[in-house]
Length: 272
Ligand SMILES: C[S@@+](CC[C@H](N)C(=O)[O-])C[C@H]1O[C@@H](n2cnc3c(N)ncnc32)[C@H](O)[C@@H]1O
Image (tube, rainbow, N blue to C red; front, side, top):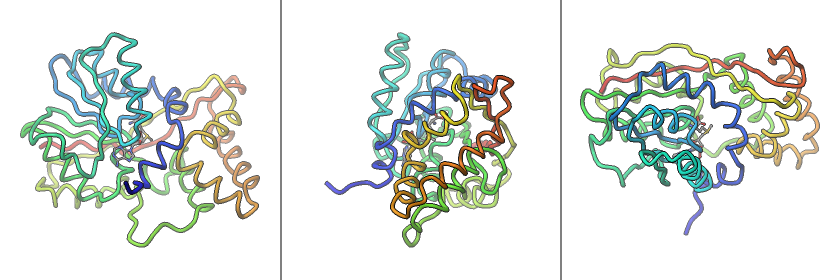
């Protein structure tokens, strides 16, 4: 079987290590969307369930879909440990959700998930296809050029990584309103049904900013790829230093041995 590079990138790491720092914001986001009992929710690019579990705790019927099999297993284990029988996780690719029927969900949530899938026009089409008319799609997308944490990590990481293959569309283009409108328009949703707001996710860790950088280095696919490339060019120490300086600068925790870093993202709501 041929290797799916997107799947390989996320499976080589262990995103659960980063996700642990995102739980509070995940819960707050689901609260603000108004997820409640009986709602059929698809959480796309769900990781280990940072937003899927809060939806299920509020009584929704939740399916988490992710390309990384280790994260699907971690999500199912977390749901089981909490006794959440209304929440399950399965492998799937946001660019081709052939296993899911048309108009199956009231709400599709994809927080920093579908943005990482290749073929963004197919991703928009698939999200619209599986949402019932009258339903909603809510995406959280990092914003290119934004000065806060994740956009800067991805920017620094890409400056140490080999150039992407020809035809590669950067995931960060999902953070540009014009691109989002164009993609949903091609999926049949007019621009007046797409709305945007800037929101914040806060990464909280009991570990220091430097230790948090180490987690990105060892467990976050895109940063691991950058370190592997930097290593080959003898630039791994430079990359580490740039990231540590970034994390220190952005840390808002009063206890400097802990980390609390707010990051801005584009919240997209699509009325289907
Ligand atoms: C930054 S993580 C976010 C995970 C989760 N939504 C959260 O908020 O913690 C990105 C996730 O997208 C998943 N992903 C990447 N490409 C995907 C694709 N083509 N289809 C489905 N999931 C994908 C990754 O495996 C990873 O779990």
